[in-house]
Length: 87
View 1 (spheres, helix red, strand yellow):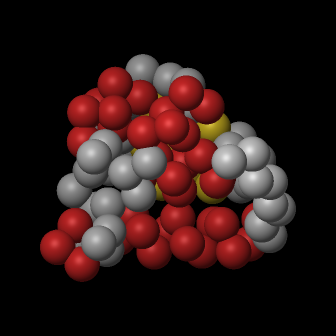
View 2 (tube, rainbow, N blue to C red; view 1 turned 45 degrees about the vertical axis):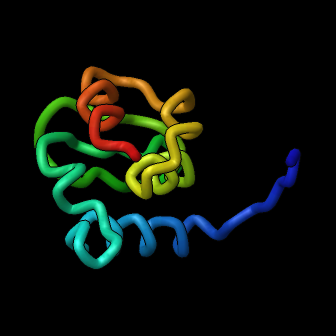
């Protein structure tokens, strides 16, 4: 679609923190990220333990929300594990 939008870093971090602690049964990603460490490269944020998945906070949020398109913007040894859980 080519749509571009900017989001406040604070809002992205809050949304990401909420998404990773919410169970999948309520639309969250707690189970999907249980074995990886998410590290935002554009914010002071690192969540979880395990192989790292690093990238912009928006890309992390999209990926844990099941948006596979965001996986291309992420790096680290945990990307494969996260990709295996993305819808």
